[in-house]
Image (cartoon, rainbow, N blue to C red):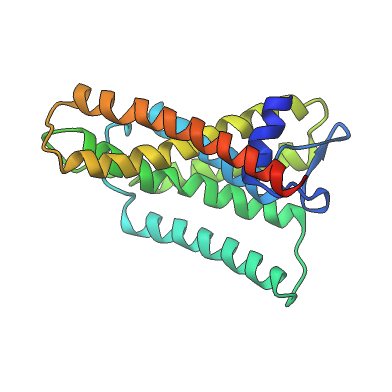
Length: 220
């Protein structure tokens, strides 16, 4: 559990009043971050396990606008509560985090694929309304489980959150470095992957090592 707590410690304030407790134990990150990271890894698995895993274009316009709307909801909730204009709850934080969490991979993953594969044949990573409906149903189920049916689920939820943290940060680095590699005129998928992914593993390791150490120094 020390590893899980350190990973959470690196990316989150871990304030008890903004966190969810299961079985009397505080989850590794706050309610909003729990939603973001669990939502992200669920969405990534949704992509990888579907026929969309080689799609290189972001969702169709109305789905993309829906995901952007989810991000606006989170921003408004966070900003208005921070400014003292209104109060929010961990239930709202978790739900808004889940909605943003499922959105992020659908923008980053296709950009990564677009930079990895040659030749390019554009295909949207999410284009059908019932796939979005399925995702939202999944979000609702996860929300209900975490808030209402969470007995004995502290460790599974903590491990899933930690996996989401590492996966989302890895995806962010991979997407960023894929743009750099795309300008190197390397046309082979394997060569690109061998150049990008090991670097990203190193970057994630360095990032969290530095963040954990910095966080401990600031709170010493």
